[in-house]
Length: 214
Figure 1 (tube, one colour):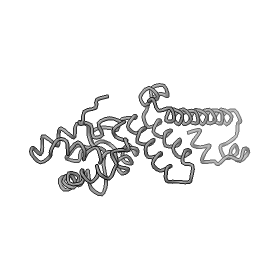
Figure 2 (cartoon, helix red, strand yellow; figure 1 turned 60 degrees about the vertical axis):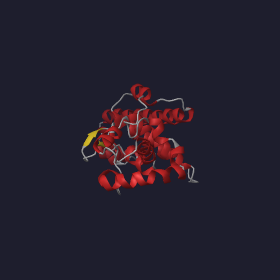
Figure 3 (cartoon, one colour; figure 1 turned 30 degrees about the vertical axis):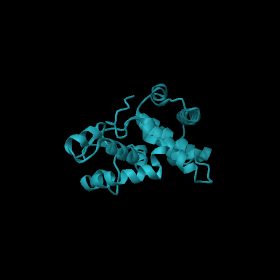
Figure 4 (tube, one colour; figure 1 turned 90 degrees about the horizontal axis):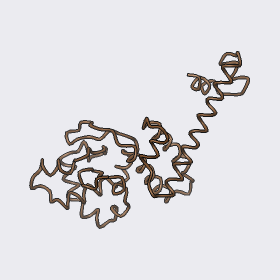
């Protein structure tokens, strides 16, 4: 992974590092963030959008003399580690350039890490067990990636043992759901019943059966 500030977020780990949210760093970054909001309200305003890779260099080139290199790095780091920014990454919104054009998909690994960080932040403040919600989100992110389970794990795996456990459980639950759906479809096809009759016989919601059989 490239650790250059061209990625805003530059790479998964810095994107979610909690130390970037320290009040002192936020105060130092505020003047630059206010300037970015003034210049690009469509990216840094009431709604955040994922930023294209290379936005740091693009900002420096487009606004020579307006930003100090280290100040801009800090501001982009604070911005891309914010909960609101992580939410737009987790929602798989497209990356945008400075003119507001959608240019690229957010990578599966960035979506995955954003979901994990948001879960950890929320779980730390909530008495509710948020793991079931996280598993559903990880399953949705995996399905949206278009990758096989092996390919997806290879893309997102890390040395974080807890995160690996969460992913393993989510993919295992997904595999079980698919197996149950396949068994249901097979039973229906061999039953000789109409969908309504089959659903009534087994106490299944007809809408669930219709989704399963396509």
